[in-house]
Image (cartoon, rainbow, N blue to C red):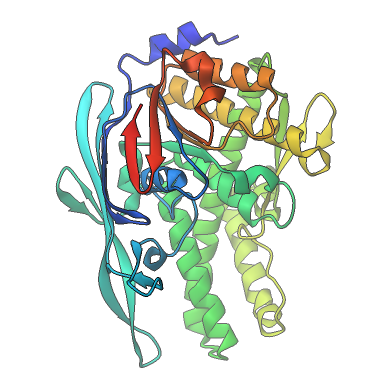
Length: 401
């Protein structure tokens, strides 16, 4: 098995966030934290703003953040004299000093007002901008070179129930850590698909235009499918060779036509098939039916010891399966990239008995990484009393304990 000692040998220097600054973000007018490169425990009452700190950190990585929120919904909200909610600020910002393998970097992201022309109409929207070491960069994917984050939230406890979209998003975030272009691909795919869908729903059947979009969608889609397959194969190999001694064994699978075709056919042939699916699917869109593709793929998880699909497991077992995935992903990334991701664990101890809770905390300690963990009760973290940094959130302020 890969021991914590071997993993710690791979990490020559600790990585993580050394300073975090929020400006007009959610309930924080201004907040500055100087976290240690170790477990960071954030406690406070429900609704006090603990999760907002984790969400802010998530915006220092590619994607739409921990809550997948609209940019306009994140700006600070205050109460006016009449006790009515009022949005006081039009922008928000998050910045951080990052340490990665002994080097120091500054990451920042914020929103700015922008306009776009759409169907002879000008619409205003909030655009997210990103800076690295004070220089504006054109794509969020650049953030992945400096900081990687994995998160679990209470909303994800039931990720194995319902539709596949949350599971697919969870998988894609895991892929980001190993393939920095994956975030750009998924954003490009979403943009192209929306445009293709919009044109068809509007009845604009310009064949050359649609064929051009379909060619791009197919090429990007097959690249997305290939990256997902590689990640799932990587994790399955690790899980098979390095089973966890406490948390459940897993088997991972992709339930998607495009991903499955790549097992048998060359990528160029799968692209041709994808274009045919899209071409034939134009009528499906008109009839409000779905089109099969990488935007329909499901990420399937099985409890290995029981050979049971995750959706049939108990709530507690589903939580343990998620923890198994992030532990495997974390170890894989440490061994492959030489630096650990930052873990954002929101109310992670819920649904865990004391044995599992303490086992997880000991594993986080042994992995020698930075993990931001929220809870209402600091007493749950007695095993980390000498190794973690503790903060308490009270009335929009964060105090170190």
